[in-house]
Length: 428
Image (cartoon, rainbow, N blue to C red; front, top):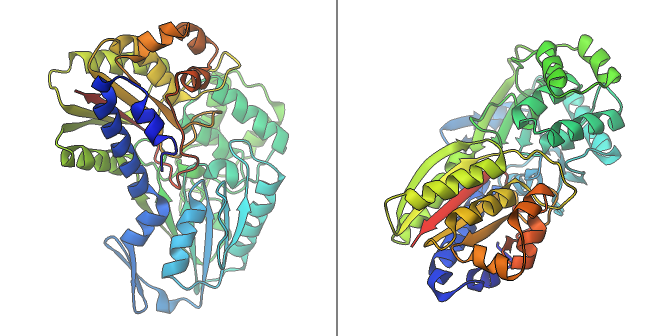
């Protein structure tokens, strides 16, 4: 899945070739295992008129019609697997992937900023929910990116984009952002599920720490525990002064109960970290997962992880972290949180027998074409030889350009999943 695997593994001295190659192989294994098509084909099976999803059993013979809907970066890959397992009557998914399906309509929407195509596709999904009745089943495939792709705001599209962009630039967390999105939407915060009398089965790939169903894709099929007042406080905290949004929040409704819905988390960051551990141990390393709740400002996290790796007492070890950090955007460069993590760690691990990967499992890090980056104890020296000043690239939020020049940006394209980020630190 890593397109530039060979050049990344070999872009170092002989001393680091082995550990870089192993880290890249571990990452590649994680991405293959977490790919939503591969995942659903493994965990869902059909026997006669029953569907088994892990320990859940659903009798589909009692439904007159089955509809398939989905939204998120991985929704088309998920739908492709469902098409091979379940016979459904009609389907529609909104995604960023270039995938054609045999039966379901695919809308290729825009992300992170919604567009008219997202609005049009959302209306199609709303139509399915409104037409379905008590003896129908709607299967909903939800993954990261769904908040932008499923979009029917209570304010203008331009206003919604402006607020989202401003909040993201100011370092707003994904949890805070999705609270605001829910209360400025006609479909988020359980409002989509409220539109139907049908039974709703949501299969969810989590891209948020702790797997809060009501925040993943802004919870279109989940009851909402947050309030418009809470959303207003977040807007005030980050200095957003959009009058249209403030007025809309005064009229917001709250969905506190949904009896017709079953939400199932089928994949998350913990699963990705466990896959990494499995592969590390298979390769003969001592492996340990330290957390799957890593958060904070990316450059601070990178420094801390670099320092931690230096003092960690075991050699031939793979240290595994997962979660999602944030970046306060000040410059006009190209990059993302994962590349900033690695860039910040380079000075800490210089001349150490350490290699370091940070990668966004969807394959897209920030506004760059890379999913993350790799570095090792030689990277600082290589940067100095090319007159690359780390602090300057950090100040401009230009981490991709740094790693492009160094030859250490990891390129995969969309991976067909999104379970936040993973950091792999290898000690020789």
